[in-house]
Amino acid sequence: MLRHVVLFKWKSKTSPEKIEEIEAALSGLPAKIPEIAGFEWGTDVSVQDFDAGFTHCLVVSLASEHDRDVYLPHPAHAEFIALSRPHVEDLIVVDYHPHDTTGAANGLGNEE
Image (cartoon, rainbow, N blue to C red):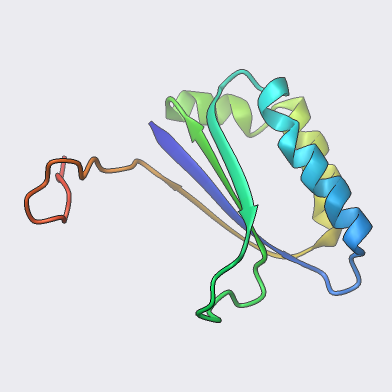
């Protein structure tokens, strides 16, 4: 399994209506890209004030790096990027393989 995580910071001039349009396009990606094994997104609700202006988080689960390599250039993903990119002030993207911590006695996870 591979997780593809994206944090979005929008330009200050981006209207709430445009952000709603971007959210709708984002929500439609799983129906258009079969390689997506899991998908969730949300907006920041933290009370810790460490968001640095990033308001939206996307987590896409993919079965493999191969599926990520299909997902990234997929036409539906390219459409989403074309819609959202002009409104993005900053992005953080992290891809990682999750470690299974279930059953780990020390809570630190199993190193593989």
